[in-house]
Image: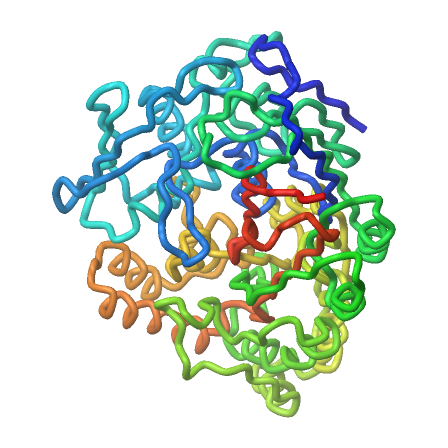
Length: 517
């Protein structure tokens, strides 16, 4: 077990500005962030941490519009250039002032991150105009510049400069490794990390110098405890041991909703839960008939009804309804008889054996879903050796492509269909970062060509047509195993007003949270 004392650039960790309204929030999630380095992994947990300890240039509002944060305003200069104007007087936790040099430092680091460089592949550079003005420039006309700006959380360039005690660069980016940036943090956000014991406890104190003086948030301290087991997490909320939990398991929705001690907040989700079939590990997966057989063997509606208790939407594609790429013609296709026939047609009537891995504390009911899928595959004579593990152990194995079939859930944080394709279905390319989370090593040049065209098309109708065509290609090709879009649920004790700060991206803006006695 590793204990990390977070260094705050030599700053004295004083108490936040105390007011009569100051409150402590005790919260429990199903897992804790794997690192303090915002660029180490592109995941919901890391983005949740970033919204607490850093600030983005721009963030999504509840209506899926854009809200200025560290960028006060922006305007289009030409077809390739968007100019941003930074908020003045913003300070990092270290006391250093934020300027364009920090944004440039962050942008350059994002371009080298294995997880993020695919998002920023369309950008040719960042041009500094002055201390508070810069341009983001793209290679070609690009429709998602502001969407991508929601990923830019300026880092303290001075804090992360130089070498650590081991002689390594402080800005060194190491996935699942031991680095200065993974253990130390200096952001501009509403909270400072004051204590971290990985897997046990994470504590935050309110940033007394936080720039957003209009925020009504009155939470002075946050104590974050990861509780993997859903029943234990719910029990902690109902007993008053914690004030706020996420996620609420489907089995406990009615129980929580019926009590007068807590509030339940739910909303439809856009995170797709899938399995990917590794064609580099299993020869049979190269045959589209086998992949189609597997997809036809999976009862998405049964999983949504029985395991998710109806708190999920069965899926046949990546894009949820409301996204430009959503193709209304694509429906789940559970048909066991057809699945068996496809296996026979491909010469695999007697089946074969595979390995499967899934997390057991990352997605709602992830281990139970994996067990159900393994049972369904057994009906077409595919024998599954299933292993489930905590998120902290799962992601390194996922990066290693350590099993024949692996689970991956994805929320398109740009709120755009192309984000799914870039990370989950694009031909894997370590240079560009495309296909970074494509553990199936699936590759379809036709789909990738349409994806690239959609990235430079500014007409929404034309983009929609292209991306819906991609969904059709992936559907026909059985590129992956779609399961469902995971709905969202949060629980909080009475008086903890979470409804205004939660959103469909699942990045609660806790800096704005108000607790009423």
